Image 1 (cartoon, each protein chain N blue to C red):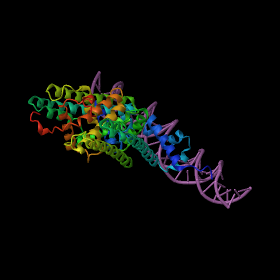
Image 2 (image 1 turned 90 degrees about the vertical axis):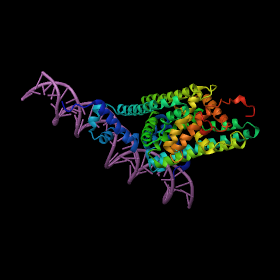
Image 3 (image 1 turned 45 degrees about the vertical axis):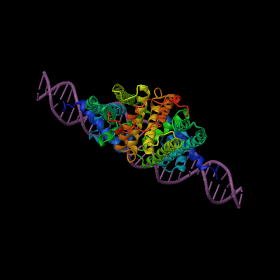
Image 4 (image 1 turned 30 degrees about the horizontal axis):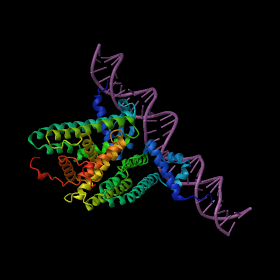
Length: 214
Length: 214
DNA sequence: GCTAATTTAGCACAGCTGTGCTAGGTTGTG
DNA sequence: CACAACCTAGCACAGCTGTGCTAAATTAGC
């Protein structure tokens, strides 16, 4: 037999080639031939590991969110400790900041992810992967808010479901702004906004009916 | 001469064909031939009105945001009156809800817009159009918050710039959720979240330094 | 009815695409 | 050494792409 190839490694290598092309020229340029060229392989070799282009692209997306997921999980572990010394809001903030594209590596990941998300409109498999990633972020939001409640840093009168959705939407919006308008949504500013948002959660909700002057 | 064609109308018709294809099969399917077929014209005819594919797609996006912009402006005029009878927050809410894809027409527009936004990563002209649309939404946010301050429904201690960015990001995130996860982000729920968000603006900001127990 | 401007239809070219397929090279194992 | 398993290289096919270009059809104004 020829050099026995580690299939997982080779597939991962091809996924990375897809990422590079996507970042540089967009996902639509990630043709089988293009990916082969990028990975310095023959197109036949690419098709030996992925019998179809869809399979390749879907694998590339799965690989990406796995990578992102690993980074976030690793970061989350580091921050848990902070919560035990009174700096609860700061710990929560750190957890959430981990989800945003605040440095070059995460920015790159987010840009590629964004390209895949656009593809989700026309590919149900990619849509499903996207949904999973989305649920992961939501869980992180929910978990963070749970901690705030636990440590008395969030008013108990607030519905955690609503606040989770609101926080999640805020994060997604900030991510979009960080990617598209970095001059306006700088990392420092985004951190400040998030800090304000978290601090406000201490205050009990003002439900619409509370104030007749509205 | 043959039937003299209203160029503006024909171009608009072709833009609509692009929209339909984009919604149904994605923007990458909007080939010159495909658009011609969709509009029941020969490809040569399409190229008589748009000498290049890029020109066609860019026009289709411009036409889309013009349409959206007109709808929003028209809706905004209707709501102004409300602000003069004490229902300030409700008026502000109505203005903001106008920006979200809460009915079928706006959902359709938003889905097509989303496809174009994805293209902005690889087309600087489309990126510019997107930026303009983005600024429009931001202006609407800023204007709404200005009104709240004016009528005493937002704490003067809050930085209007920060709150604009926060509101804008929230809206963008909610839009994404409405499109991708309608089962979770229902119109009613989104309206509730926004209502909470607006009501909180009455409360003065709790700056990080205010509370030593954070 | 004729002319000339406007619009349509569609062929042609070069180049790309995904995928099916085969022939060959490489090397671990018997 | 030989066999067989694994991988690579690349040709072939049918079909799509954007764009250049020309010939014809249509009709308003004279």
